[in-house]
Length: 81
Image (cartoon, rainbow, N blue to C red):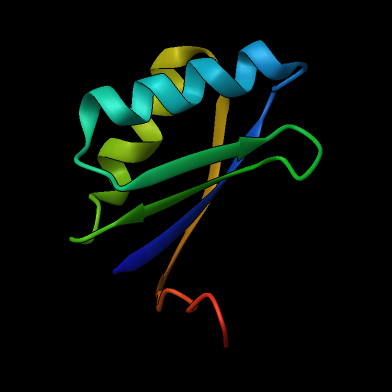
């Protein structure tokens, strides 16, 4: 699994977070996506690496400012670990 974190400026409310999450889900095959207006970021879990340029474009097209994209390996934590 790959964890992709992208900075997002311009989110003001929960609906802004939802708009970004839906846009990401429509354009990429993802396992999970969460956005945080307080952290100014969106975190995406996927099986395959995402195209950073396309991801930035999707967020920009939604009306927000896309920032730096970071990717790292993600290992799911077990329930009893």
